[in-house]
Length: 389
Ligand code: CAA
Image (cartoon, rainbow, N blue to C red; front, side, top):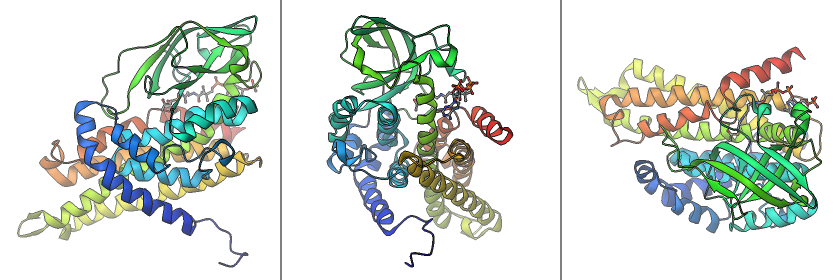
């Protein structure tokens, strides 16, 4: 390719990675997706397959033993896993969410200590921001961290924590100065085995049933002072900067789920015969398929565009519109995924409404992408604030 032509599209390497992940996902993850959903059990087969192929946390830099994949490659991995199993796609996605605060703001010692085991596939890393009374208004959190000599002592309850209980490490945001509002929040690494850490019951959810969502309860958890991520009082900024990078991975999950539903519906409409012909021959069905694919491709391109901006920002470049494009792609892709999966159920008719076919699971799984890492109402608020700034 001529060096003068800007490289906007995924490279050949990105497409090779997509082919590899697709093959692996179809062979090793898809066969268990329905069972994982039905039994609400963790997709251990997916974790094993991803770890064996070094695809469980591809974003971790080579310096810490990771694959050092760029943000677009990470998006492609999550997208391809989500295409067959949304619950399993939360393994690479949440490993990124939990570790980005350490990557962005952690000390070198913290990075070495905590990123290396994640890169090796020995530990997973979750992110603990929300609380029972602090969801969209994340800064109103109550979890406290109090300094005591060479330690911090944490007390509080974090809620909706993805992969809680299976992750070894947690980035926990806690109030260190109650008089300072958002500037009085700090971020810490908490380990599952720290004394005083326990987990609530598994939430009984509509979708992503294979990924445990639980409270993380902190009862006088005493951790060494050097487990703070960045300077005291910078935790909320770190938490939001992290979301600027990781809302893009939720968009990736959404487009993957939507692609899975579209692919299934495309196969079905060619086979299903009514009125003496395949239903794919009806223009009403064709227009639905065209709209689904058109909107999906639009969402995908915005997500890839955002991923490239995320990569540039991670490499120290100033990217003033990262917050906007990150919220925009998450919001667009998740709304599009909800519509596409609902239309896929419609195209399968009564069959689509049953558990004999995967599209009803995909529709249930798509719903969460409009909710977590900030509801789509919050995304619109974030975008509007950027526009009016
Ligand atoms: N990057 C860095 N800093 C940012 C920022 C950004 N994108 N946006 C705001 N900030 C800074 C502000 O500059 C401000 O700092 P200063 O006072 O030093 O200037 C500070 O953060 C507070 O900003 P605001 O006053 O704008 O904060 P707010 O309380 O009004 O609202 C919000 C912020 C955007 C609504 C935020 O609370 C938010 O995003 N809420 C949604 C929460 C969310 O996404 N939760 C997801 C949980 S994680 C999850 O779901 C994961 C999972 O398990 C899969």
